[in-house]
Amino acid sequence: MNAEQLIGKLMSYYNVFSMHELSSKIGISQPAISKWKNNNSILAIKKKCRELGIYDEIFGNLNKIIDIASEVNQAAKEINEVDIDETTLLLFKEAYQKAKNSDNIKGLRVYLMDFDQQIKPIDTITLNDFKNILDETLKNSKKN
Image (cartoon, rainbow, N blue to C red):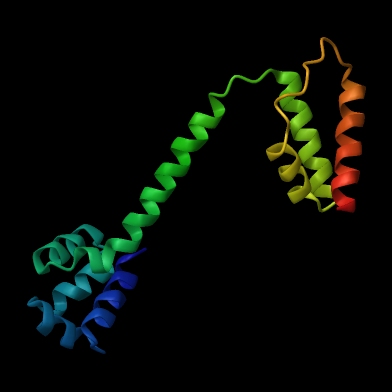
């Protein structure tokens, strides 16, 4: 968000329609507000909002977006730390692409979420066998 948009939020907050009216409400000169706008002085606007006690009202949503983005980035880092071998990762990617192409991502997700952990592990399986299993599962989930 730039200074002009923030000044617009301030005007909306104070229910005023001109920079002159805004300057009266927040106790600074109109040229100072014009300077904020022309120089894109976001830090000066933040400082004034803190002084006025309206920082959260003007910047609250921006901070929430930044916090959410930070949480998403942290989650992505944690996901990348999952110990998964390259072959399995490639198979997941291929299964995802097939589900996406057949417009059945939900079916793949349901299958993965319902994966029975009680299944006996298979000692060896070929890549083609695994692909066939995934293809069959996607077909079956598409039918449902």
